[in-house]
Amino acid sequence: MAKVGPFVTTPGAGSYCRVTLDSGEKVVVSHDKGGFKGGRLTIEASRLMGFSSEPVFAFDLDAPEGRAALSRLAGDAAEGSADATPLGAFVGLVKACPSVAEVKSRCARLGSPA
Image (tube, rainbow, N blue to C red; front, side, top):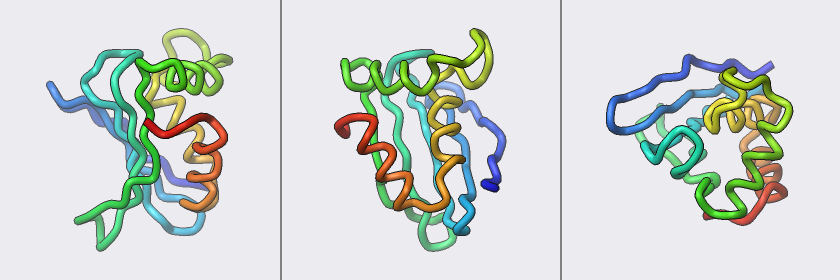
């Protein structure tokens, strides 16, 4: 089972969460300061002990594709819960994946990269 770190909010910069997948690979899901529902959401794989990262996928949550992806992921979440937020919805997607390759595959099925 994936290990999900705390949701961290940084004033003026947005929020992020680190997830360690079953494979041992580490992923960071970040939501920029674009707002509660909009903005840009990125998923990156940590490399070199966390000092660098490789982009996995990015979603523009203000674009139709990004809104559709968020709607599919957060559609059943209880209103006001962490899972109803962009960060929570995408962390839910990532934590269900055993590897970065699977994260890439599931994100590609959700929609085009931003």
